[in-house]
Image (tube, rainbow, N blue to C red; front, side, top):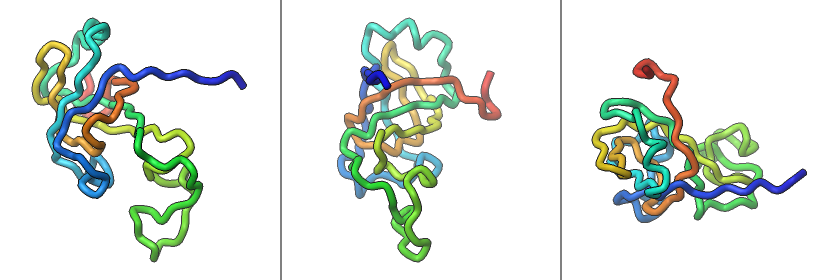
Length: 135
């Protein structure tokens, strides 16, 4: 198989500095943050609007990649599960998916609610949500 090359399109700016501070999932988060998109992608942000929910893919740059089984949400009473059956950040390719509410847009900066990743986390992609507020 040919290697896959990914390049971040930006980085996250938020108050979450350690893994212990991060919510387990974006559905558990009301944390504000900013998606700082590299200026060359400014045109790709056209039609993203305040109030909209967007899907953001992140590269969890500090996550372990050597674990194949984890306790879901750290709950040992549930037993070990394969990482592909969980939303654990620890996985061979640590890609995270979050649905975030857009609260403001300033050029290449998008303020959002629901951040569940660390400050400085690379952003891989942004997509339109298919949720109820999708237009």
